Amino acid sequence: MLNLSEYRSKADRLADHLPWAALVAPGIVLNKDGSFQRTLRFRGPDLESATEAELVGICARANNALRRLGSGWALFFEAERTEALGYPNSHFPDAASWLVDEERRAAFEGKVAHYESRYHLTLVFMPPPDAQARAESALVDSHYSRGERDWRQDLARFRDETNRVLDLFSG
Image (tube, rainbow, N blue to C red; front, top):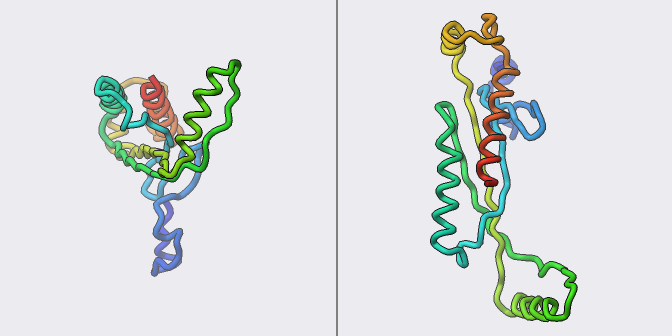
């Protein structure tokens, strides 16, 4: 990456403190240190009403997805709780279903506040150093082992790995 200290010695702008350099692909950010970053937002199950078997299954699925990542990866999890804005509108084909939903709506609109949880998972991958990549390309014969390192190869690897993790999480 470009060393900006020769142009400005003091970090006085917000961009000087943020790690992001550029958006290099849809949803993928190149950081100033050369790493790639992708953030996924998801809604998990209601932890209050989930059974123990459901929680064990979710943990097993997450473990299966994340254990496939090798070295050079960092994971950041964030949970966000926000107050639920309103009960969603819905249409039912019969009166019995509508009546059950109206009871739920009345309970929801009572005096108790309701919250929604949203979760964010940020996957960060630091490609191996050039010396390690050269040694790897010398040992493994592929169409990328021409001697020069291409950032597109690292980007494609990052995109493919994060897509694989996404697929494993979605079950």
